[in-house]
Image 1 (tube, helix red, strand yellow):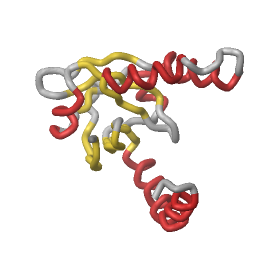
Image 2: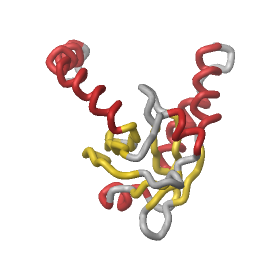
Image 3: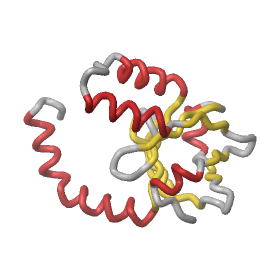
Length: 144
């Protein structure tokens, strides 16, 4: 399971070192895709296959399904993890997520999210203030 929060530096060539704990679980080839809330999502190949399969099963007749599939598949790239654990973030994805020198890497069970560090801290503050209400809503639908 991918969990935890790590702050790392992205170098001038858009390379980021994956935390050691993430490297052990993710393997040598991973998928970097546009994420929600202006972050990037990083998946193992196995997890990407599951997500791809579910998205492919959605009806192409529904405009929302077509749009989301284009968003996910059109922006996704397969990336190699180099011998010292770094990944290269393509320029268009780095720009999309406003990635600068400092990035936050967040383990979210089946994926890693990569955030602009400042945006991550702002987002986290808002969510922390709502945590009790969010937990109550999840409890009402039987999640917690």
